[in-house]
Structures are given as C-alpha cells and as structure tokens.
Image 1: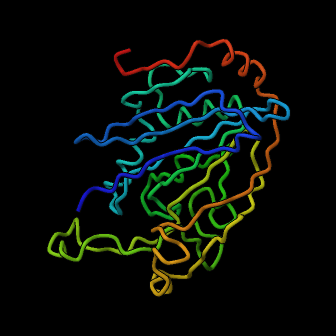
Image 2: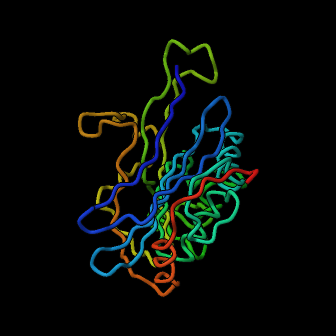
Length: 259
C-alpha cells in the first residue's frame, strides 16, 4: 500500500475572526515526504484579541523507533519554512519552539495528530515532551503530566484496522489494530478549562473496542472527532505590540537552514 499522507489545516469563522498571518514549517521525512505544520494568527473581530492556532500530523508507527522519529520532528529545527517571524522566531525553529514562542505572545492552541498516546511506555514521548506546567491538554482529566491514566477507562481517538490483508507476509505492512488516544489538543497562554463537545469515546481495553471499529456510517474516518470548547481569556502578553508588528510587515519570509 501507499504511504498514508495526512494533511494539516486551520479553519476559522470569518465573521468572528480575521487571519493576520498564515505560516508553515516543513520537516523532511525523506523520500519526498514531509510533515507540514501550519500556524495561523487570528484577531477577534469584536476587540482585536489575538489567538494563534497550530495544526500538524506526525508520522505513525507503534515502535520505539517510530516514537523517536516523532520526537525528532517536534524538537529538531525544521527543514524549511515560510513565516512572518512576528513571534520572534529566528532561523528555522522546531515545532516545540514554534508552539512555545506563540504561547509567550498570545493564547495558543496546538491541534495534533500525534500518532502517540499519553500512556506510551517509552522514556521520552510526545505527550511528556509537550505537556508541562505552562501547557494544558484536553486529556488532563484522564492523564497525569507523566502520562499515567487517572481513570478505569481511557479515551480513544482512533479505533481501526490498518493495512492490507494481501501484505500479511510482511511484518511492517500486515494489518494491525490502531487503537488509542492518539489525537491531541494542547493549549497555553490564556486558553483553559476545556470541555469536550463530542464524546469522548472511552473503552477499558482494545478488545472491548473491536466490535465498534472505524470507519462507520456515523464516523466515516479512522479517527473520532476531537472537538472541545476552551475558555478564551486574552492576557497581557504584549499582544497589542504583536498585532502592530504584523500590520506593518510586508509579508512572510521563506527560510531554510542555510538562511
């Protein structure tokens, strides 16, 4: 089968928000494949309050090596980018740095197909790399910052059989049960108190989830929707100066490691 190539996008209500900048970072995966991270700086129409939203999808895989590859994409400098630099970013920052610099200046949300559950046993994980005292998650009621489950049942964002039965002879391609809390919504800089607007769906074990595999007529995807309401409280983080900087900038700049 062909490699799964997920995309990243940010949508907003045009009657309530104005997009000031639309930027991206690209992390090379090799063989012509990349991970793209999109960042949009929005201004609320009613009062100009800023909100930054990032969207990304990390590569899949259940092995420790796959988790290490995801961590590299989060923490190592990006291969290239096209961004305004209004958050003080220089060179080609990593995804984690981009998220942090956004949160220093404005309320920021990171919507992430992490392909990694908070409870992964690896020493270093996506969850523990991003979750901190300053960064919250919509899954904080279920998981500690260390990734330990707080409740008897766990939230599930993907529950599907992936792979082609014709490839059963190949260990890397044979069908497998993709199951777990692998989609994330992290927030910082003035966003808080998340309330789930859909579900979440919870199971006590993967065997309990098998009779309800995705996709289905009600959920035509291998992922459940992750929809949450967040309290948006503008905070004094120099946001007014940030808006001014964006307003006077000629446009985004394209950068690469050699720039």
